[in-house]
Length: 85
Image (cartoon, rainbow, N blue to C red; front, side, top):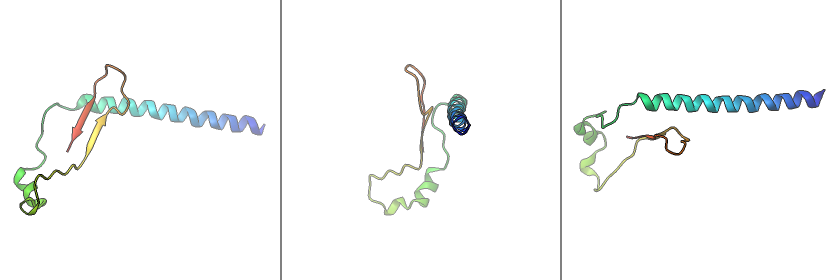
């Protein structure tokens, strides 16, 4: 009886992982399809200049705040949504 319960527990854990992965993929596809292409200004250049003390920094200077690629796994020929802040 113990082997049956242990096997069923492993089966349920595996099923939960597969289901969660599927839901995650669907969620990522929905988020990526809802995004509008092109550049969007989140903060004014003057505000960024002040916040990062750009006048005192050696150039060239680049700071990446975040990077996101959706979906994480893509099928050949599929679409990729890439966001860089």
